[in-house]
Image (cartoon, rainbow, N blue to C red):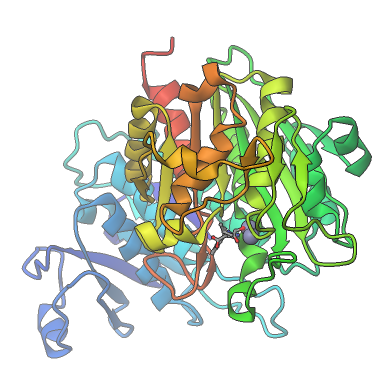
Length: 488
Ligand code: BES
Ligand code: ZN
Ligand code: ZN
């Protein structure tokens, strides 16, 4: 679906249908031409409420003047037109009283809302909107120019399409995407964007002494891969590593998951998929930062050679880890990948993204990403970026007592906490052990276990993968290195 702005009045645009947002239930707005019909239909203009008047060629959606409400309303509009014959819609940006933020939100909401994953359906849904034209008239925001609007639409399209790409990867089942095929896909995508890519296989991981990563992968018929993609623009303002957990399947290993919990664990590759989406989007947007996406790809399975509770592993930085639960595997893969990132890249900032703990979902609910780290400033900046991007994020705080719960009697650290409580934070504190001390205030951990996979659709997220983390991190990069004057 394409979204464009044209320098003509709404009336002059030929389209099959017009989308009209009702802001704050105001049915008296001069642009609402069907007040009586809407009343008859019982339409009040509540958020998420839709009234479709096909014979009039108009579709009304309840909304509020808030950027994320605009996303949701735009997604409701395109969804209402799915499976129907309407190909081309138009909307007036005046409806949104339109600061540029709301135009971006409209575009993102429409593209995200139009997403569906039908690769494995014999019958594909082909009908639906192909094009939305925004009219350029009567805007309230003086900073609005046609040029600005066009650029914003392009940017929002890149961000939303990258999110949809990540959704596609995460939704693809584990019999099709496993470490080798994931790496192959990453290679194709990186080549399309002229990005450098290195793929490490099992032998390379051995040479790199990644004993924790290798142990997790050992019982799988599909050997692991580490993918390292580099985006290096001229005059980069900072060097950033984004490290993603890429468990193409997490059965739990010998600490096997119960059947009900195992379903959806194809989504345990969401962190790596997001990291891939972010670097591709950064390149397309031309962001002025050197980015390194490091994907730790493995499958956590059972078998005669599986790693076991009681094993002691040695990570790349020489630290020893007592395994007490093979289902706490993501932190083992990430531990080695974090060491790798610091050694090979020496980044100014290091961000890891992972569907790391069920505890994070318990703590924050299924819509919200957990943000953890040592630096209050960095956490604050990411939380603000999340908010501006339309993603939900909340902080989970470290304290002086929790690290003790990871003590092991026989190794340097244990892979699980001795307490049932605070599991999202203790997982992050485990990762912290693999960040060099002088780098810890430049590190952030994002636990996306909640929002990465949607079991019951919400907002503009249909059932399945949401692409969590992509929009938030892109916004963070823009906030820190494009808009922020702190980094010249
Ligand atoms: N991949 C899971 C975490 C997860 C749970 C992601 C639910 C998405 C939805 C992770 O590897 C895991 O199994 N973690 C364990 C850790 C425990 C053994 C300390 C968990 O959360 O139960
Ligand atoms: Zn697990
Ligand atoms: Zn996992």
